[in-house]
Length: 425
Image (cartoon, rainbow, N blue to C red; front, top):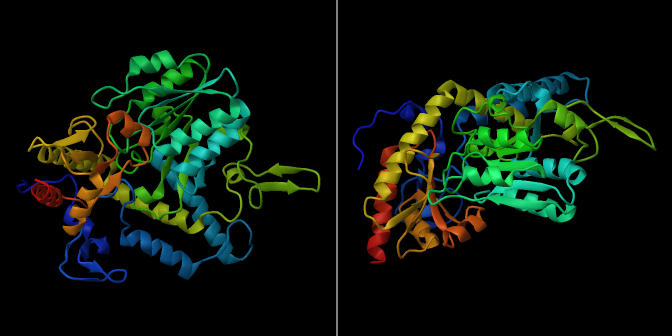
């Protein structure tokens, strides 16, 4: 169990910005935020699904709605101009955060899944055909796996999977065999949402480019937790979601190299993304607005800007070190009894999550028991059903950590797992 820890960040101060962490949960739920019976302080360990939101981000949303709520790029009046500037500056801030060349390379979507679909439909349907291949991995989230699976079915392209080894790492020799001159796209997750594996995405991009293929990196679990430089990685496309990095739901980011986005047709058509329209023809607006049809995610973009400011104030290197500390501690504590299996690499070589199973206890039952102890985790296949099939398990429990979590909270997790162990003994 934990002794006094020195964290790389000021966790106590950070927790003050998240009122939800003061909640007590448990008992019989009656209405939202209320319960009957015994309650315990919330231990929120489901950050891989959605992180919590600090006051500063909520304040940015309130400021928009109370101060300058208006549609963007459509009005001459002051409120519209202010909203337009804030929305455009949000693109600039995201570009700076991941080291993109500029706002032209940053498209706002609903989430990582929509970013995947945008590229798959706008690029894949046009460029893929029989004799082509798309190479992905055995650890992909359904957002990537299902999307490329269906696009390959529509186009006649072949879908290939880079295998994983016993520790849950990519077999890069196998990757080099699969990626060949038929390959048009390599799509890989940066940090696995189940295994915690941190993939060598720069090497995968290099392999793709050696064969004149593009590379799409799913950064949904990476951008919130570590510094990401899309230029250094040399990804052609990179996607992530705001709700996993302190932002609101309903906003995702697609980074794409400007020359590639320029060559692609729009994914959605309508207002905002057009320059000229006649009854016969239409032309498209400049990047990135060409891919943001209709009223865009204005509030969400402004709030994402605030979330990035919050993370940058902490320092992404510090965020990464804190996550690594928690992941290693959780790995060691959970495996101490010998009846817990954790999937993926060792605790000092993974992202900030652990997916595991307790011998003799179904993951759903374990999650329910943990909930009785006010410990919130995820249970299921985590949108990686084929990976779970490969691992030989129907489901797993997953604890995922973020900037406001502590080793003491991991102790609470371990104590609740101990209770489940005794219950099913």
